[in-house]
Length: 159
Image (cartoon, rainbow, N blue to C red; front, side, top):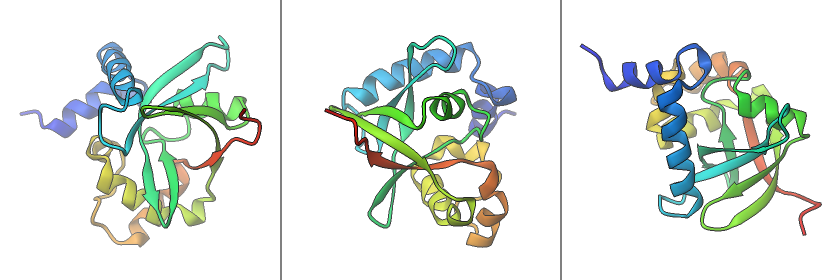
């Protein structure tokens, strides 16, 4: 018998979204960017490293100690992470309005509490990160290097 977690893992088997997940992500990104969902849901737009075209995906904006963060539930090999790195951290964040941002990678030693907060806010990410959301920080410290966390900052070159 399949569980919801099995289904979510199936959608991203091999660390990449299957066709159905791509369609779901597009629809979610449209809804999130329009501001139709909770304030923690948004759409991230990054430039494709090969095509140069804008790629949009749904994200959960994680708040922790007065800062905002994005987490890659699929790890450092996720396309959006690689695209972001290729473009020097430049991105657009949308939730009812467009915000030009720089995403600055957080040192792995500082990620554990942010990852725990992320799992509290993002139930869809839980099957992809091998730590229970209620686990002690030590468990998150053990996997922190495998899951990039980015602090959201206003972009200096934004008009």
